[in-house]
Length: 548
Image 1 (cartoon, helix red, strand yellow):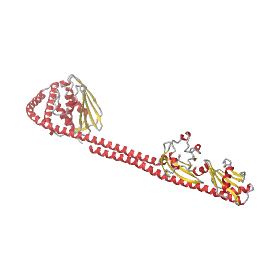
Image 2 (cartoon, helix red, strand yellow; image 1 turned 120 degrees about the vertical axis):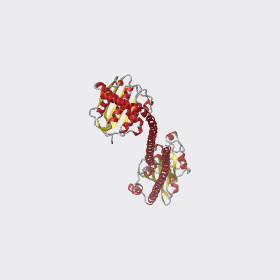
Image 3 (tube, helix red, strand yellow; image 1 turned 90 degrees about the horizontal axis):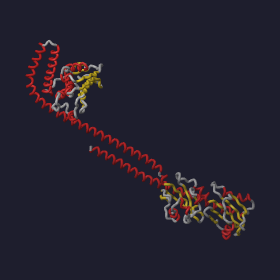
Image 4 (tube, helix red, strand yellow; image 1 turned 180 degrees about the vertical axis):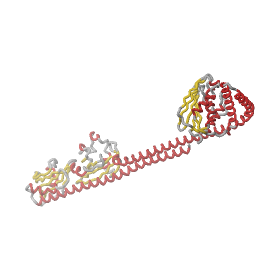
């Protein structure tokens, strides 16, 4: 038993170790996956920041080209203006823009593009480029607008300016809008001063500065520490952090030059979404491990139950073996005891047999003759029992022959019909008429039937009812003897077939032990059920062919 518990303990320890390793492996795999995903985000942020910087650089080169052409050729017609500025509007990105040609006094000579984009004030534009003629492109921007101003000069004389205004939201949306990291990951942008330039999830917050936050800024953010570290250069380019909302996120960022300003492009995604696939697969493996644990526990429990059953069976077998040994010892003692008694009773019994035989031969009265036959039968039965007790371990072998059980029961009842003890007993017969014929020892079976009947009669000293029933049971025959006598307690019931048991006031207890031995020789069984005050029930079970 101890070995089984050790095995079960080892199995449980192995399964728990597997579950612990599974959790550790899951956490390690999630961290590695998040780091790899974060590096991909960094590459994506860097690529889009570079593309945005290249786009703005291309626009700046186009503006130089337009300003140079305008200084060489005087633009007088709308068609000339459109031909000159087509290069700006031919890009594939849907970015709102407006281009204007201003005269030397600030008047608007030509205008083209979306009116939704307001350009800088003309006076401020001219004041910025008039003194730099000829000069490079002047860039002006705020949180919503990015403007490029190119002076138009001829022979170092200022003729006017070409102004291009772009919507920063459109620029950012064109480059960063398609970026999706799962269902809740996205890209956003701010400048080096802390102004939010683009945010797909919080468009109302665009234009706010994280150093000048209001109460409305904290509806979705508790702090802006991470953003400040990015601006101040105190943060790595990628990593994992806890968002102000309390959610664990991963973040990567890169920068793009926009004139004299620096735009910061950041890509973030919830950590839970990045590791979702890993958690799903590891959850499946966890269920497998749990199933293995349950099956292992079930098998271990079954092994323990089977071991206990086997242990009980072995213990019961040992107990029965001990009882058999004790029974054999009792039989040996009984044989030594009865061998002396038989020699003392044998001689007088022989004389009585002789006189009974003489009287039977001389008697002509039918009733008296039947009475003498009954006396002869019981004396012969006494002699047979005495002989069996004296040589119990060497009882004669059974002589098997075909027999009708119902006829044998009736014959046994006829032998005791004149016994005084039977006179106050009501015998109820319930014999199945179509019982098959069995092969058994007729004489020994009749002896057992008479013994059980007389034992039942002795249990009913004040009268009662004895029910005898014959029936088919499984592949054999069963004979039930049920009386309404005094019954037996558990202690007496456990020793009913003990040949040395003599606790009974009347009856033939040793004869019941002999009967038990006879039925065993006939390959049958003799069982008894009893309760004090409720009578007893003896059952003889015999196979159809006891010789086999």
